[in-house]
Length: 111
Length: 117
Image 1 (spheres, rainbow over the protein chains, first blue to last red):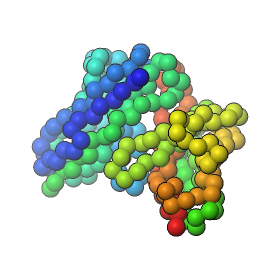
Image 2: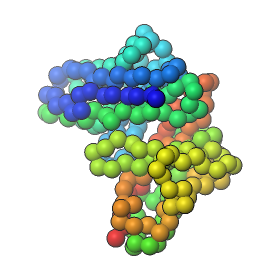
Image 3: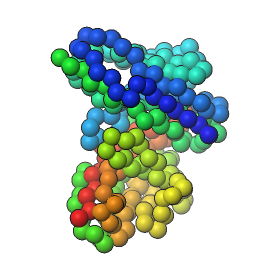
Image 4: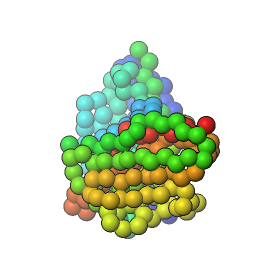
């Protein structure tokens, strides 16, 4: 069974204080790993897809990396508007389109 | 691109009535749509997977007669909560996907807040 574990559950940072969110996964044949951002009361917003170990993707202050067992979402010099819940999901090559989601990390950035 | 809409964004209904929620992919054709339920401070719980023109596949523990899903076209899926009860109150989110090569990136709608009184 595919599993995704995200840590920490919650993270509080001061504005400008860089940090990383972790997503550990077990999957039978990784087709892709996704990162989403979810604001309260809204649907998740797609951020990145990573396909293979060693791959990195960047968007503004966010950088996602992937190894064979985990992914990190690095946040550089965060701002209060980066406060949200970040979700990680994996898609197995055996699952046509279906993804397994982690429970998310809730990030709060204080000014 | 990859915009998904949901309607309504919120709805209040009385116990025993039925409520229909629409999910549309606005700028792409979605071969597959997913319906999720989310409780406060919890992650997404997959309810069912629907493919255009075929019956939905429900996750274990989800009552198919209570949560009716219809995927009538490549841009529209509907979820009908039949004979709603207060315990059905939740945040319902759909996602739409279409394969890009071998991978299916999911794009989510904004969600529908259902309150059953």
